[in-house]
Image 1: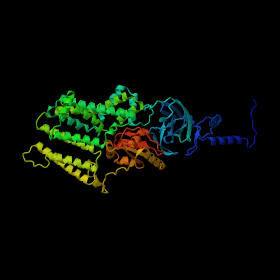
Image 2 (image 1 turned 180 degrees about the vertical axis):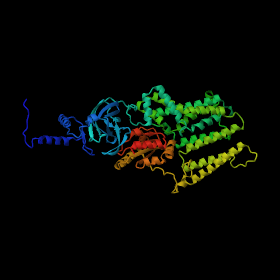
Image 3 (image 1 turned 180 degrees about the horizontal axis):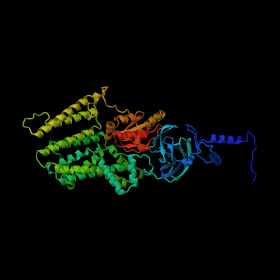
Image 4 (image 1 turned 90 degrees about the horizontal axis):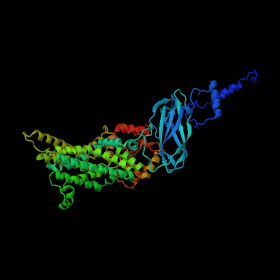
Length: 636
């Protein structure tokens, strides 16, 4: 083959120089500028040829860097018919930006994408975008799907992303099309699974995942342990004086065995009520406990406690009419307050009326039942949870039967103490439906009268025993606190733990933090309007589901929302509150829209109006944990 020669002229290398210049300008990857138009990652024979030639000649400024397909290799795993997981395998010393991800459906009838669940990234400062969150090595992103088409469906997905190399080289925004064959779906959708997504998952979803994937024995044992942790929460703690009052109501006739039997019946009835209410809520979406938070139910139940309390003070003895006793003799041998049927009824009603708030383990079980329809396993988990909550009650009730004095004036004094506790439970129920100032007055009356009975105003002779002096001292403390509560009620105070807060609010130098300013919304339409306004302002939103009868909601306001760190994290967030106290059709529709079972529940929406579902909160959390959640959910 003859050699190819070129004329020996001054311009004989001009074509090579022009080619070199063209290749150096063609390298589109050597750019740090933001806003470079997006381009699809498609292979081209001519492009590859010129790129290879440029690399060999040392003309490409990006020759030391990997092509996008190698630097950021992607794949998709079909987690189930309602969920995809997108994986990116990132090359060494390369990274992807967290806020540059985007996902769209190119084709796929009846399929819409939910909010992508991205795990926390690593903070990094680079010249392209400043301080950003980035991913090294690998990242897994879970994308929930909403389906109206339940048949097996081909889906074409568009992935958007952008990344850089540590050596200072940044790729332009990239797009990649991926074909996915979605399997046939079931309805309702399956329970949430962890799927090795590596992303943040809400606590209630983790419990639902445990039910879906864990062994039955270990799952039930874990829910029993969670029940133990829930025992002394505000929604369960009032059951302690209720059960103790039932035991003390037996007087000197109580034995350890009978105390155990009464406690066991109470706990089993309570557990049965929780299980039945939970299964019904999971299957049909209605909160049976919320139904019982009406004024007439709460007032009736409070009057029952008042009647029991006055019987313990010795004003009268509670006993069913003779005609009723004769009909129930075969069931429980002369029914009286504190017998087996009475304990069972009280335990059942206590579960429905005393503790209506939603906690994360309870919500997890309800989510599992609602998504799978598996009432057997979900109900068993709820029953194990309830038994865990009731175990300390069983121990305390049995111990009370053993420790209570058998006869004498001591027994009357002990019964009077439990009578006061039952009156406290009655006030605790009534504060859900009466004004806060009236609640303070009731607490004040309880403390003042108790102080008088303890001898706060009595004269002690010099020869008085140490016990009398101790009780008088306790009475004086209760009397002073009762007076303070009265002053708080007169000044507009609302919190029994901070009755004089109204005085300090008028002091400019006072330290109390102002309460968060929530805007109330009603129903689905009201929420959509507020989300549209927030989207127009490009601001995130926090939606708080609240009810007057929800004790944990008030605990969140008192202990969590008042924390300075929480208020700082929420300073630029639009705060909405859905008051579902009435539990009417609009409230139930709003709860059903998000698959919620009751308050307290908190939802976060990004500036585009999309809910950050993985950051949902159900149940009470403290200030520090909530601040961390807020900053993660809203990327503050």
